[in-house]
Length: 257
Image (tube, rainbow, N blue to C red; front, top):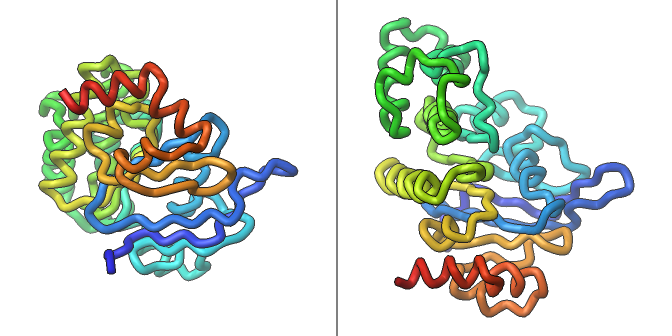
C-alpha cells in the first residue's frame, strides 16, 4: 500500500448557496509531485487552503502527515505548520521586509531561541537553494522581478525543512523560459530533499515536465487521479478540451520530442 501523506474524505466547501466541493476524496502519496488541475471556479485554491487549515470546510475529514487538519488540538495544528511549506500564487511576501527577513519569519516563529547569526545563515542557505544569488537577501520584494519573487517565496516555504510543499500556480506570470527553469528547480529540490509536492497549476508544460500524477477537479469533486498519459484518454468534456486543445497538443509534442 502506498504511503499516504494527505488523505481527504467527503470534503464539502460552500460559499452561501454556491457548492464548490461535494463528497471530494483525495490521497497524496509520499514523495510524489501531484499536479492539481481544473477549470476556473472549481476550487483548486480552496482545496489547498482547506488542507493546510486556512479555511474551515463545511464537512469532511482531512489528515495531513498523520495529524487531523480539522482538529482543535494545538499539537495537531503545530505539527502540520512545522512540516508544511506554502508558496502562494503571488509569493505573499511581506513588502516591508527584505528577502532575508521574509525567509526568517518562520524560523523566528517556530525556533525563537536560534541565534541571529544562525538564523541568517539558514535563510541564506534557503535563498541559494531557491536559485537566488546571495545579494538577494538584502533586497525588498519590490526590487525583484516576478520570477525572483516566486523564488524568494519558495525559499521562505523551505525555511523549516518541511517534507510537504504546497505550490499555488508557481509558474503563473512567468515567461516560458522562466517557467521551465522553475519547473526544473522544483523537480531538483523534490528529488534532492525527498519532498512531497502538492502543485496547483494550469500550465500544461509543467504537468508534462514534472508531475508524477495529476488530479482533475471537476463537477465539485476529484474526477480522476492518474499519470497524465491515462488522463489523456478520459472522455469528460473539460478533460478532453484541456488535454487535446491546441495548448495541450503543443505541450504533448514538447514533452515527447
